[in-house]
Image (tube, rainbow, N blue to C red; front, side, top):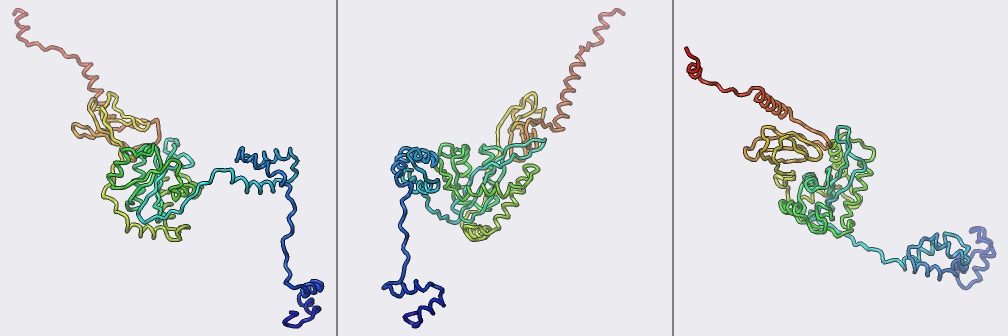
Length: 391
């Protein structure tokens, strides 16, 4: 304004409001005015940095409260904030280097991540009983499509049923399944025979994660917090079927949203991923429990804490039992007769008797009673009496 526009100092003062002495000094200076940093005052922590470093060298995780107590005995009179700021700078030098993570890129149809999580509340199973449940969860990390299935044990038949149901909900087969070292899957890092058989029937590969490396399937681990906070919160469940139905409808809804990470609609991305995945087989592998037993004199079989009646006419004969998530069936091995068919109940300590079995049992008991009441009497021919009695 002074050199170019030829304005006076008074006019510059009127236009800018800057003090005239400041304007005069600025015009008289050889360089433009600048404001450098003020000289730092010595820190109250300066004399104690060596002692703090010695304490951290002995115990890197020593709390700031204890460090402050130690240096106060040596004369420190400063505050907590400057000590905390210094510890944030010094402590990483003495701690082991933190773990680093690389960014993972997923290819379409390559992986399906599986895991188990527990609902925060027990599930009503009828008969005024609650039971602890587990969720078999599955996520396709490329499309971020999610599915879940409710089971009541960590045994492999239940987990296999959950995996089958999740794959059916997602609508196609990936190249590999990703699991951590779950007891029924790979307790010591080596896949169990039932898990290998399941993968073999579907021609699936598998990846078992290293111990303590759950972050390798972080795309699914984060969803567990979402399930607890968004699905379970504020909901009531009448029974396991109601829980599963609400879970399926919730999965359908979140699979229709735009995912925050991919910035794409999940179901649309899933549709494109199906082009790289194999179709589901006509029949998924059987996940029923099977075993053979001989029908005892008291014709009941015990499964999952409950007793189910068997046909009493098959006592002493061997039957094959098949227990699925929906029913318990028993079939005679020698004749193929149906020995029992019951709806499976997840409550415990109960006895279920088929009315037909009860009727057959009462009929058999009645026959035994009649045989005891009517003793057999020898019937002799009349000719023998004629020979003994004279005419």
